[in-house]
Length: 299
Image (tube, rainbow, N blue to C red; front, side):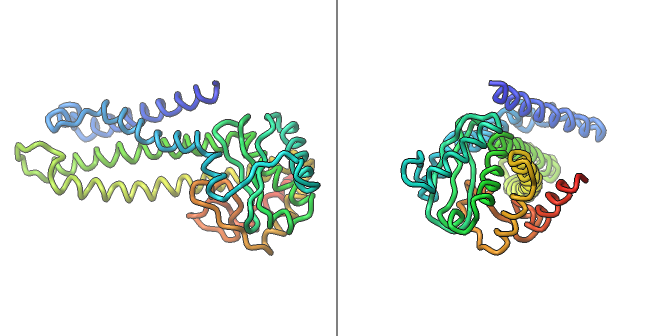
């Protein structure tokens, strides 16, 4: 309940700040936005609500269905440990890590595929942790335990909700700013014509251009935050296991493997990042290892 409350309050706060900044800019430029947009058929308050609803709706629905979507996307099968010795070890390891992370036992699943693992779920106490058959075969148990610690850290930190919150806020900003800029451009270039603003070709041209440009900028913010989140999960794994060494070994092992490709809906929750890029959801393996080595040295 606290997380949902903070979720709603943060979104409302961001939209309020956005509105305040917009009105300050208009004041500096000597523009009366309420009068201008009222004449042109644009209600800023209604647009803010519209942007917030449509910006958040898709992400919230996807988050609520994330476990089902994830399992269907990769063909993951939930296990309870009775399937065999390897499955029993996996379930008990996740149970132990969940207790250390102070979260409820998540669902555990296995799927056929190249080396990868991911965590997802709308709530930290009702999550899913899944690993591929290849990563189980290629890693030692201590290395795999470190990977599971990394995924459990994502769960404990509520990263799935946080990523949805961030994406939703940015989506709302993109929708709001695209429409406002398009109306301003259409108004400025209409040469005083009395037609209703926002109905001409210029409006749609500017609107779609701003959607693309702001969408790319929003994606860069999401990717940047996702990379920060990976460092935190690595450190969380080190804390759960009592040492950064297992996670360092696991990352080095991954450097010699070909990580399996995950669907876009859960890509940010899996393993990736052999090379650094501003468009990557994960830092490079070298950067992650370096961060853990600094942690190990107490720097």
